[in-house]
Image 1 (cartoon, rainbow, N blue to C red):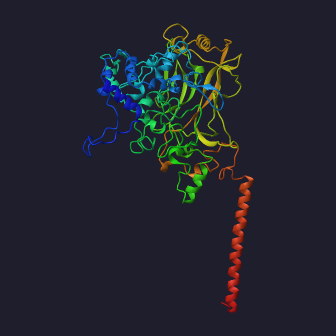
Image 2 (cartoon, rainbow, N blue to C red; image 1 turned 180 degrees about the vertical axis):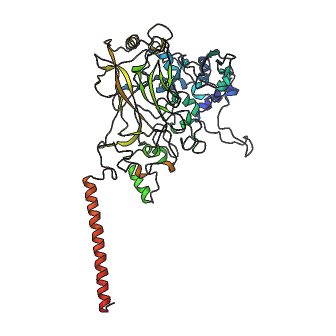
Image 3 (cartoon, rainbow, N blue to C red; image 1 turned 90 degrees about the vertical axis):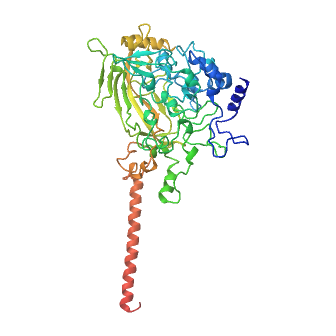
Length: 554
């Protein structure tokens, strides 16, 4: 055991690079492993394990500092303070335009938490390192998936139901004679000895399925990224960069850069030679601030655009690619309708769910052209208790920046629209209790908005009048994934045209779009005068040349 502990210390001291060969190393040309420890050789990981926390205790026996690092991360706390606005954000605190809120719905929402047993926020012990789920990020078998209603736990016993849980490992699903499916629990000991660097599957099990389904929320994060073509994502495609999430989101002590709460538009940090910075994430971390061929006129002009146009604007012409649609509209106000006293579902012409009794009406779209706006990286949220104007479109979040604000660039977004509940007296957005197998307040059980909203607000600490309505909302989601190959990047005419992609982006002059602006007219006059002068000059030279020839002076 002492030898195993010493090996683990070596793991903590290295960053995952291969060990160099020594005189006792295998012969030249023999394969050298990329890992510094073979977890299958650790007796402490061979189980048996009854729960995920049992595995975590074994992990922490060697990785003694990992727990302390994780409990300080946003993946664990679901809370962060925006350094610009000072707002306390994170999934624990904000409302969204999809599934709504965490409070009173914890066992369902926390199925994507990197921990076990977050059933009530008030009682969950965020200092208990044994509640950390190591396997959800480090499983390499593909068998480990959390169950969606178990507060972060995987299955520990078989469960049979009529439909398949997605995502779930094919090898762990057995079809019964009556057509129902039995989901088997993962073999925790097998997973524990097969851990490694996070893969696309690890990150995607939560980030691809947020909001209740594949690609519902982000639009640019879906199961299509598991094995994408270069068209879907040139970075992640096996025929492109074959990268995984942590190749860009480079971790440092279990913290990863990149956040929709506070955008990083450019990398201004000092980097260590030969390495991407581990704290800052931006396109120019790898591609530099002059990514185009500067010797060509077009390349030089495109490099000039970098100061005002985000790389994503030209290189992500559309999102929701690869055959996986995203939700663009969610109307909660229509939820609760029954047919013959029972909940029901309706599909649209493409076979997608267009109405659910428990969730309301939806609209979906594929290959979506982004909405464009000037953005300086600042995002501000409408928090619980903040006044809104219910007579207009309410921003669940608002993006900062503008054409006249330094540091702002044109950026692509998914703009999510819908209807959500609000307090008609206090004039603020409110939260609801939708999930709960016990009691009678959960909307998904009783379809009673009065009870669901009252219970949700009782768990918020914000006063509630008891009178509610529904207001139209919007939410802005930065689009940074599903980067197309360079050959598919937008051409100049896509924006520099009267009916181009930036036709509705106001507050600045855009050549080709604003063709009747005074500057355009002056430019055309100057061009006409220049061409006229050139023509007059040429005509005079031709006439003088003829006169000389006629006089015999040639």
